Image 1 (cartoon, rainbow over the protein chains, first blue to last red):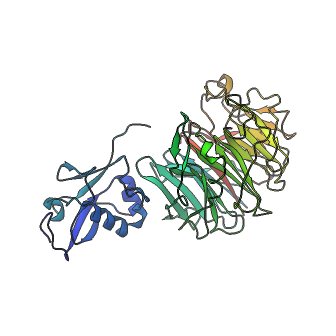
Image 2 (image 1 turned 60 degrees about the vertical axis):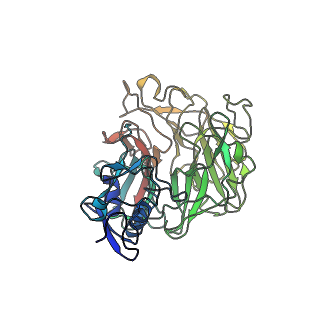
Image 3 (image 1 turned 180 degrees about the vertical axis):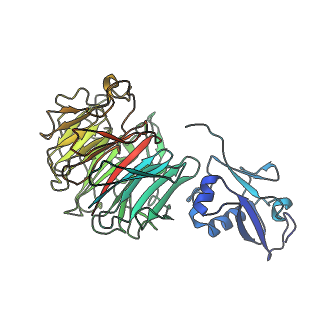
Amino acid sequence: MTEGGTPDQRAVTTVRVALPHQLRVLAGIHGPAEVQVAGNVTLGATLDALEAAYPPLAGTIRDRETRRRRAMIRLFADGADLSDADASTPLPGVVTSGQQPLRLVGAIAGGA
Amino acid sequence: MGEIRVLVGTSKGAFVLTADEGRAEWRVDGPLFGGWEVYHLVGSPADPDRLYASLSKGWFGQVVQRSDDGGRSWQSAGNDLRYEGEPGTHQHFDGSAQPWRFTRIWQLVPDHADPDSVLAGVEDAALFRTTDGAMTWRELPALRSHPTAAGWAPGAGGLCLHTILADSGDNQRLLVAISSAGVLASEDGGTSWELATTGLRSDFLPDPEAEVGHCVHKLARHPGRPDRVYMQKHWDVLRSDDHGYSWHEISGDLPTDFGFAIAVHAHDPDTVYVVPITSDELHFPPDGRLRVYRSRTAGGRWEPLTAGLPQRDCYVNVLRDGLAVDTLDPCGVYLGTTGGQVYVSADEGEQWHTIVRDLPRVLSVEVQTLP
């Protein structure tokens, strides 16, 4: 286990990622995804690890080509909105310590 | 005894409807992919147990799923569809230049002989191919490099390549339809393309007979007569007898020639079906009566088919992929509506029955006639 935000470069940290229903179905899981993040536990490294561990999720959270977050996916950790945070942003200690998941939320956008 | 499998894509998932060849008792399975917009669900002619599904959603983008066992189980396939080179721009609604951007797959067309080979028509309009069962995709970039492409503009549904007609007798011949650009034809497997819009007239265009800008809603043809192609355009029903290179109107005595869907009888290239819709502003059947019209004369003269279809207070639409046929004799005709009804006629359209009444908005209907 590493300390939040400043982990050992060589350490591997288990991060839980809570996904919306449709993405859980795609990934074939019922609860949060668990991913192994090597080195600094940043937002970008965690999403990279998520896509590597669950290939069907590739392209569903970030655009395949631009790597930018899809407009109606929001990212939260420890109550903070990280949706527009840089990929290099470290995840907070409650996430890297396993107490809370990184949350991916489908934006409430109305419609049918 | 054979089996009919109807593959229904809806705005909230997919459904599989099965019956024996009597087509009277139906089993409804689903939803598959609940919550996803399933623009197309289709089987391989070469291997009916190989199915492909195009799933998309504003939140999560495009996903492709594949089944190798007739839909009992599914696996994720490749969804990495990238335009070749610098995508450039096309025209936006307001005339401004809009960068080409991949949004979704509208149509998947498996090869008639190879279940691993599939063409995909996408939004923004382009053509892709896989030869490994949808695991990887490559664009056929000549289409999007056509000299007129920078002037293509979207219809209300986006700049979508919604129809691909591949000639099973000559795999070099392709026709594609793009809303709202028109039709393009290739004689060399997609290496080069020619506009196939001669004879189209769209009064909303500054030049009604312009080369591009026509909102073609759907093309259909009989596989045994590939040069004869039918078109439901925004307004007008048309026919070409020369693989799309020239068109003439066959609306004849239809009550309105606006509509989206068109299908050809499985055994008679002269018999064609449309579902007239009131107008471009009123996307429901005229007079609240859902009527399929059939021509047995390759257009021009049409007869309404109403038995078993709602003839009052019906204000659903039938979208461009909402009409399909099976290959039994007599030919079965299938109709899916935006109200979630799927109807079947087991006798060429004479008498209709409701298979299922309360599905989500039906986006596509495909029929597999299984041995």
